[in-house]
Amino acid sequence: MNCPGCLKANESAYCNRCRKLLFEGRKVDPYLPFDSPSHESTDLFLDHTRKISISGVQVKYSLRLEGDQLQLTDQGGQYLLKPVPVGQFKHLDQAPANEHLTMQIARQVYQLNIPANALIFFRDGSPAYLVKRFDQKPEGGRFLQEDFAQIAQITSESHGLHYKYDLSYEALGKLIRQYIPAYRIEVEKFLRLILFNYIFSNGDAHVKNFSAIQTVQGDYVLTPAYDLLCTRIHSPNESDMALSLFEEFSKAYEAYGFYTYEDFYLFGQGLGIKPSRVEKIIGAFAEEKPLVKAIIDRSFLKEEIKEEYLRLYRDKLTRLELKFEEPVDKSMK
Image (cartoon, rainbow, N blue to C red; front, side):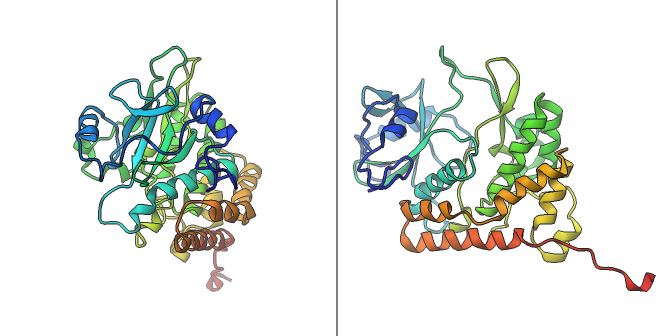
């Protein structure tokens, strides 16, 4: 099989680079020493689930590296483990491979800042998504981190059950400019992440999936991107984006019924990015990248899901090719 970390071809286990990024160079086996939650007959997972408080609807578990093995832990976790989720969505057995593939494309093709991650397998062969925590201080403890629901001070009590979807990306951009000192750098990262989520059909990039984290200098920057996956694979009828791009729909969106080049160009300018930079950033996402298909082909997705993943990617690229021209009102001439 390919490396379960970077998907490098002809690697039977984690390659040297992935072992260094993920496990301090240790030879960790791609198979965990215990079965998945659905096959584990003991209280192993139940005990840990009760003691972990992590936001998000998918059950996650905390792991710690002990020698050359990953073990479930109650405290001091270094990794998060996301098994195959349960629910009413389609192809949920493909969710770990989907998230892993999308995160690898983000890093390898578009150079987005993401945490070290990999696929890993339970003893019974079931896959899980593994991600290394990015909030740990070298001397111990964790850097202060707040998601944008916390920054905006919105909760289920103040804004209802769907509060995570209550703002627009334009509103998040304003919060970045307001609260992050180095916002001129961070808004470009934000634009690139929004574009990535769009072309890879991540329809669940809600308010809590964007966060700011304290640096060693004491200021704040955007965290590495997390929870990136092609949600359209699992929910074919969902909207293109979790949040509206603007607080009010643009004329281009009203004309086509979906976002195009014009929308992201206006969005980038609204973030305060120079027009030439906006054009360059959109251009990097608007052209098809051969490496995307190559990584999809090497991924752990089923063949039919690989084809759908690629089709959805190419469909979004055709939308970015469209440039809106407002029709001329001939009655005024």
